[in-house]
Length: 164
Image 1 (tube, rainbow, N blue to C red):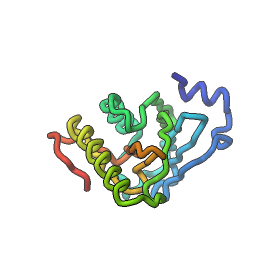
Image 2: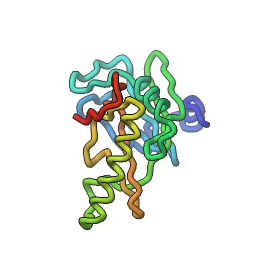
Image 3: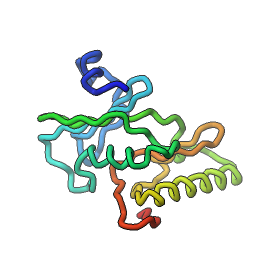
Image 4: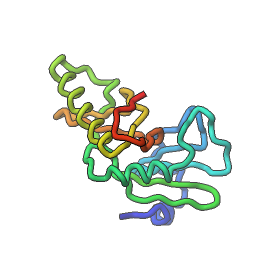
């Protein structure tokens, strides 16, 4: 397992790593890709957007650790926080966002069924994703379904489906 400090040692300028997402609601949140590792980073001294329920990456890390036996979600590798940044390292999940796929009817039904089973697995662990949108659903060529972006996820008091 590689730590964020090791990544910073190998790549001292994090802006040189491939930026794959910058939040439109919170510019201090950025997501980078390095080989097969996703790095979510948030500058701490900047104001949090009121549009986001998530107030830190540590909560997302804890939820992903709680669900680490589920293969269809990113695996949390490492979390760190210092005076300036908090960082979360995750495994890269392959696939194309559902929004950009043109599926035949039976393929689409298969994807929905696999998504339902995945959401049920989360629900059994009392986790609600809260951001199930086509951009967060990844599908591979052989129709394996994954769910990403757990920054809005919460732990529920009971294992129920709370998708909204």
